[in-house]
Length: 434
Image (cartoon, rainbow, N blue to C red):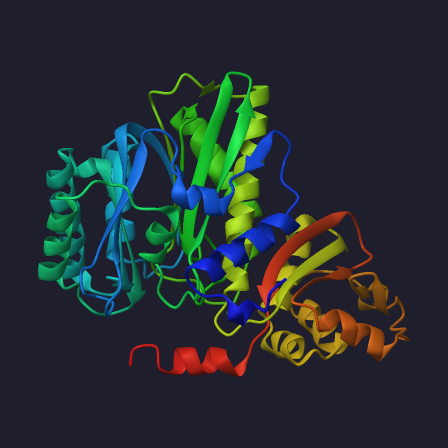
């Protein structure tokens, strides 16, 4: 794996994505898209397209994205649990209810979160939606809206309206990379991928883009993600699939322990396809596995791009009394600043790991705990620790590895993906607004 901080836009982004894709074990009946080929050919499923524009929120960069569906699509979504949720989250929830989850477009701006902006922020979000709906010739409630960026600043609506107008004059032929770039904030590379899925009725495509680098902590959604498929799935089943896959993917990642105000993940399903997926069918199981696989892949890309990160680390907790206890321990270990700085310093400091588990709220006997770095045993039950520091260093020097913590108290298990904490994280976030 390349050094994470070496990734940037363009060909390096493609290398980053392809490197992780090659290391990923994909579900059966799925074929990963060749990203270089997808750049040249079709990335979006049939019936979907994307367009980008420059609204001037981000200096010299595209900062507005519209994903549109030729026909009404069934929509499923999950949103941030942050009490101070942003105006676009409020408006998108309203539109899902008003439209019966029949959605034709998603519009997203980057560089400004439109969060903590009061009634004016809600008006601006609704104005953005109405302008988009007018350009596309659809109803406002058929549009979802998202924003990402600085909190507490009003949107430059004059610039956004002009940018939306410019989209009406061009074909929606934006590539997957450019679409993903348009929603980036502190991300160092765009995040996108797609799968072809072999169903009993034929091949369907599932494609997705995501953004996220900082303010990442598992409590849905911790970032933005937009996924589309030309498989035909009723809304109830679509929502069940997205919610379940979300718990297994985006809710298993953390960069800094902060849950954003704007987070959402949306999945759109085309309504005109002959490839219909029925509840309880074999096709439903195949599609779900592919969905979870793609969302997990995008989630791992976000952790790889954690602000200042150089390590992608899987925290795997086993032997807990319950899955809930395992999740508590795994999340606390993954969010611990002391653990994360030790990961950055490549220090096999197992004491920080067991201390984090001990304050997590999980119930277990500390004397039963064992810890491994990959297959190297660091701690055995009874607080026995006798390992080679040199062997541990060889593992900790890697860009990606797994830490296994066994609580020795049951069958519960959980996984959280995290990264190290570096000086660069402080530099990035210490001057984010300026």
